Image (cartoon, rainbow, N blue to C red; front, side, top):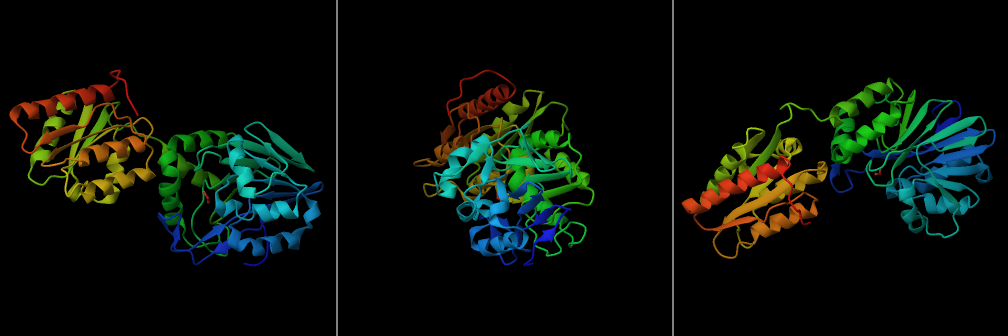
Length: 406
Ligand code: FEO
């Protein structure tokens, strides 16, 4: 699609397509490619650009702008997100329109100059309740941080009821018909995008949705994939359902114990820790042999668990692969408020337990107890220590005050 497309009477799509990309941000598969969405608003007092595109596509982006206005018409640039897929063309844009003021969130300020590669940029930081009046339009700014970078924000054209949501409500799904009511079935891409990009920030998603609730929204102009104009509330509701924590167990917290074992020693430790956790009737303990769990199940279990205990022996001075697989799942989960701990039997050096423990700390888990290591076959007394470790970890998850060193 080489031409700008009208989104509403005064708003145009000036984004670009990347149909051949197959992996995005290393972790996401993009079978349908993707789009880098950008928008241009014409008013009787000048032009506003909403976000730019990935650098390698900037030529097409500038052609679209030139088809709609002259550079001297552009008064403002609103950057909802500074990741390079949206800020790639910003340095060239600010060269072409040095007179334009750039609006960003306060958190974006340290990044802006290094991205734009100039010290001479006119910019202003904005947040919820700040607004920009231009011609007959009122653009309200909304603070929606961590979706999915700290500096992300949203905005809304009051007169046109159009929300600019940044990456929120995006999909990696290229279809040149552009609008959700015209493209193919992108449901899977919408959910996949949420799961990989927004899921680790569920609380921030809910905060953003609460702000969006005060708006009447007819169109959602996101940064990737189809523009949403057919019943936007349906998509908003999906985000709310996916981000709302259920209380299936009526307040009881879950502690999940994952282990791998070579000679049943770590398994015996795991089961005794499990008994210790279960001693508290306000906790639910789960125990899993990691070699029989696939990734989707790991993610579901991790998400529901307030506490996570991981046990592994040391093999060739390393942590066995199923544990690294489990730890890598954490990337797509919200870790806020979760507790972690590690244990394992070892024969010689026994580094695995410390390696797992360091990883949990790096992931910002609260790690209240020293890891529990037992040499080879646990004695009866040592298994009782495991039981007590489970009891103590459970008490901490249930609110016992301890000093946590991170
Ligand atoms: Fe689409 Fe977070 O950039």
